[in-house]
Length: 443
Image (cartoon, rainbow, N blue to C red; front, side, top):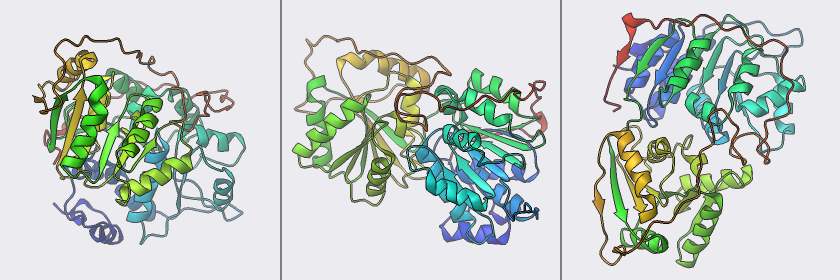
């Protein structure tokens, strides 16, 4: 099937073809017709399956085919609102909107926290039709009377499960109260937890369910390996792997921000160019590090789980779990940065005796045993005893600490007045069973 066969306009197909894409991925071929039909959509797809184009392409088509009236001042109304949990994801989604809509007369922009608000204010004065935003900064603009969401025709919640985990549920409900009741709703999630299904039942109206991967599945094209090593030799082993195999682009995950900064300093001592990206970094520093990593001038990017979602790096060859996440679902999201859109990739985890329980939990989640190896010269001490790791996942729907969203650096929600009336809870929708489609092959 081609993109034109899905019913997309020639202008959009031309932009897609210019990017080298000729055939839609499974999530695109299943989601695009649903969106074009005007129905609500509940879509589940693992990272790297092309889900962003699965909603941006049909939104561009729908909006470009309908003429809207400008306000008496000539301002363009916001017609599509796309909400994302992180700044990086928001920026990349809006970049896709501009890239695929380059031949269409549609205006788009992105707003998120951590940057100067004045350029956003100036841009909003002229109006935009497609707005990509993180919830906190969006509500900051609403509170100051800079945004009118009463003309929104399409709402997208991207990475909805992540937004719930990060404590955005209250902000989202405030935003819903500002939208017209008659609208199309699209909810995309990497996992279909009971919480996501419950939330979807309050938002979606007779949605079509589309899944292209099992819940918590890992990408088929990602080679996963476990290297056992003592905790105090992890950095030495990482350096060995990078230099021995001449790895040129490596995304490394640590459990903490302090650990990320410490590892960067240690890698510099080993003559390896590295930078860190995490919540305590300014948005400018995060953008600069990501840009260098994407263009190949930065060999190693060390990240906390802020980067587990939203980073879209084409053909990223290597992901390393320097420390295993204590939340097994985060392992799936971390390694989903490689093996994307048909490209192969490798995910390596350096596991010490302290992390064996984390490894067991991950294997239970993904329902498979991971191949385990020991590198000659880095054999772990059989007498080593596990030491407790101070972790503790925050309860669901509580704001996370730090600057990994558009909340302030004290971890508090943006100061926004709660609308006096939240949207009424509709009856639980019935999934349209006649057109549910599933595929176990994400490629």
